[in-house]
Every structure is written in C-alpha cells, then in structure tokens.
Image 1 (cartoon, rainbow, N blue to C red):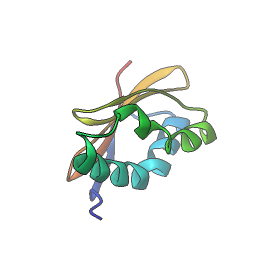
Image 2: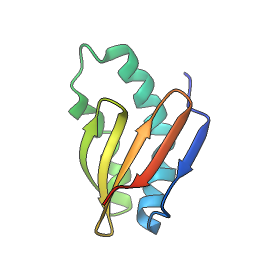
Image 3: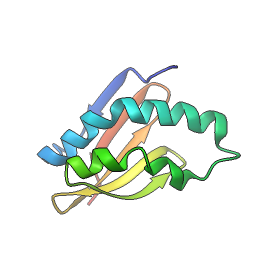
Length: 96
C-alpha cells in the first residue's frame, strides 16, 4: 500500500487540530488508496467511520468528507480546517 510521503500543516493549527492531523495521517493514506480503487462503488460518507475515534480523542468534529481533493473538513477549537490528500502529500490548513 502506498502512503503519501510528505505531510505539511499550514497556518499553525491548534494543538487539537495538529494532534488529529498527526494521528490520522496513516489512516488517511489507507483511505485515499481505498477510495482510488472503490470510488465508483462506495459512499464517501462511509470513509468518516474509521476517523471518528481519532477525532473524538482530540475533541475534533468532522464536518464532511470530500471527494476531490480527497480529505475532510473538520472543526477544532472553534476553527474550521481542511485535510487534503494526494498521491504525494497530505496537508492540513485552517480555512475559517
């Protein structure tokens, strides 16, 4: 299984957002590869299920999963963030 090599966090996310990002990188890599193979057959909303326990640990609320680019929008400490995944990078940035 191929896991994206580079990870970046922009706009200095909060401690909880950064913790969620760091703890979920491996899971996002797995889910991204699975999505590439199964996108025609599986519901993107189901991809949130394995992320929920990680999110709960950091007090994060996942708002929605995204197809393009693959990832999710979530809130942590009153701010909204976006995680995006590609073949070479997993990135987290604050959007609101």
